[in-house]
Image (cartoon, rainbow, N blue to C red; front, top):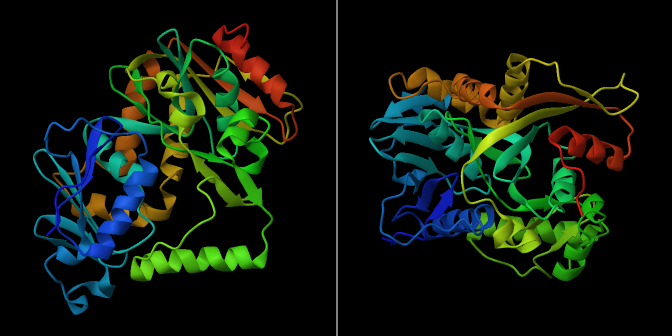
Length: 366
């Protein structure tokens, strides 16, 4: 039996690997937590975690023949997805999540399940606080959220809430989720000094590197072996490397408080648009629908499991996707400013940044 590992404070919830489990499983889960929740340490006060990760193999066995198509069941109060080999159970104060030996553990997905139960939700967006007020910019991946954050963080009073996910609360406040940034080669211009200081570089996608990376992943998955990698901030071209926002900006530039929601400006692309434009007449219901859809899209790979969880967990689940929408709908109307920013297929980033600065009343970033 193992001992309770270090906890991480993700979106205000304590997450930890529970005692026990196979040694290889523990290594993979602890590595996933360490990587995905870097610098999200929780106080060592001995409090029980809100989310406990457990080894799927510890569940009471269910023969595949007992489940139609090795599909779903409810076992010992837990919803079990036999195909994906995961299970979820809500207790009075804790969500227990069973996961098999896998490299696919998504901490935000698990945290979102717990958030929805509490009437809160992630929203897929970039966000900063300025003067103690939150400015949130929801959008699909690849829309330029990280680049926008890099520009807004140049302002001396700006603090980071997140470049990909932040938490919306029913009281109309926003909480940071400062997980590691995924930096691609095209981010170098925005983070020039950080790329240089951290030694971030991207190698050409030569076959030997691709083969070695695959061998490294398979070794970790199958045998729990950690083969060496040339450097932490080293990636293959067209892929990303992870960099902690605490390293990129410094811990004092990460927002630690829940701050009131000031601006919600959805960012979208349009093939028919000829320039960057802002529509401040858009209604909050339209923005809510967009935010709920773009956030649900984050977990589309596990939608089948989550929908089945809703169906088989009556009494404990409020409906994952409907709960996401409801939580967003409670928070957004409390924003002081709502807008829709439309980007054409081709645009200058400086034009985009200038439009955002004007919208939120930020005249200068120097």
